[in-house]
Amino acid sequence: MQHQPRGRHVLADLSGIDAAKLTSCGTIERLLRAAAEAAGAHVLHSHFHGFGPGQGVTGVALLAESHISIHTWPEHGYAAADIFMCGDARPELALQMLQSALAPQSCIVQTVERTPGRAIDPN
Image (cartoon, rainbow, N blue to C red; front, top):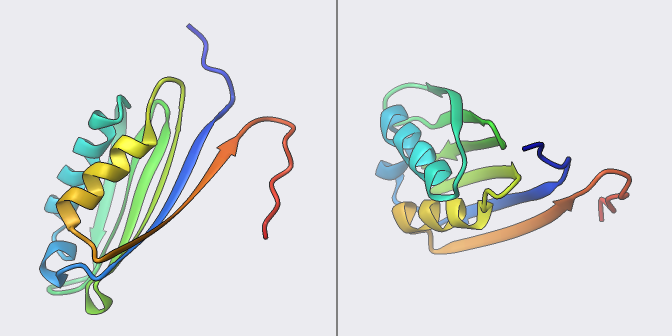
C-alpha cells in the first residue's frame, strides 16, 4: 500500500506543567513512543537529549508516518510538541496522550492539513 503525500500537522503549546515532568529524557522518550503507538504510527528511530539536571529535554521520534518531536522548558512549565503524521495515523490521539501525561493547565493547538499543491497561509 502506498501512502498519499498528505497528512495532519499538529503543533501544540502546553503550559502550566509541573517542572518535574519535563526533565527526564527517558520519561519523555517513553511518552513520545507511547503517543506514537496510540496514534497508530510506527517508530523507526528516536533521539533525545537532556540539557542537565533540572534542565529541559529535546527529542524526536522518526515515524514511518513522519515525526513527533518535543522541546521542554521546565523552568517555565512549558513544552512545545510537533506531531506530523500521514496515512491512517491519528496525531490527535498522540496529543491526547501527551496532554494526559503532562497535565498542562493550558494547551493551544494549531492543526494544518498538509496536501501537495495547497498553499499554506502563514498568518
